[in-house]
Length: 319
Ligand SMILES: Nc1nc2c(ncn2[C@@H]2O[C@H](COP(=O)(O)OP(=O)(O)OP(=O)(O)O)[C@@H](O)[C@H]2O)c(=O)[nH]1
Ligand SMILES: [Mg+2]
Image 1 (cartoon, rainbow, N blue to C red):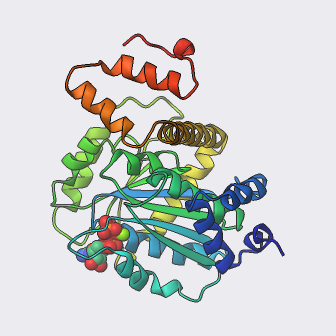
Image 2: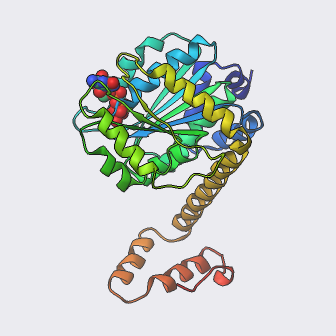
């Protein structure tokens, strides 16, 4: 059997191998994507984001247990902040997700936030693509909502869940990071703590500033205790309601996701081309020149475009 066929069969080792091949940007990886791509687009992508330590992994773990009860299979991509405090949450995730260890219907991939050849967003969507091809019904993507990259990953999921915790000033942080706007569902986790209702109220107050047309989805605000599972069935319910509500819109989200991916890939390839074309250290010298005000950034960009064989005629040179 070819690697693609083994991925289609949902073989865990083949999935892991496929992910590595694509991550390495090898020719075999590109070949594999070509082979599996026609068989993707089936999985429902659930994005879960929120501040560090909000209980996202615990919640994803609970959701997975619930989904598995229905017989559906699950793929999980957990983007771990390589926190100096925990020494990276990878081990922690393994421990917490241990409940699903040995369950062939669950595949978990932890990824570090740093060290991806082509950037975090691409690495994450590649993993999601493989899991989709492997027939996972639900693919959950957990990211810490702190950087634009992380926010973008979740924004283009089929449903975006924003997890907040009471008593940490997260509301303000989340607003700053722009993650409030991307929520289809708000979850106030650690509802066993003081201040959960207050947080629900402030999110609700924030939502009431927006105008919703009849028929628009108004993001619900749910309280959960991920550690005990309280509120998780209601969250599953909300996801299903959103899914039914947005079925007609799903194509648009998928398209947005694909456009984002294509643009991202093109920028990446272009920079690769630049780095291959210019002599070693040249890009840094150009930067030095800009810093020293010897050349302006627009002229420098136009010059580089010309050197990689792209006339800047088609590009906007106007600031
Ligand atoms: N009291 C309480 N603690 C919780 C709850 N949910 C999670 N926790 C605890 O909060 C801590 C962080 O949980 P995680 O699930 O690792 O949180 P996370 O958002 O995935 O963390 P990072 O991925 O590191 O950002 C753990 O010690 C959990 O046991 C909850 O509902 N109530
Ligand atoms: Mg986590």
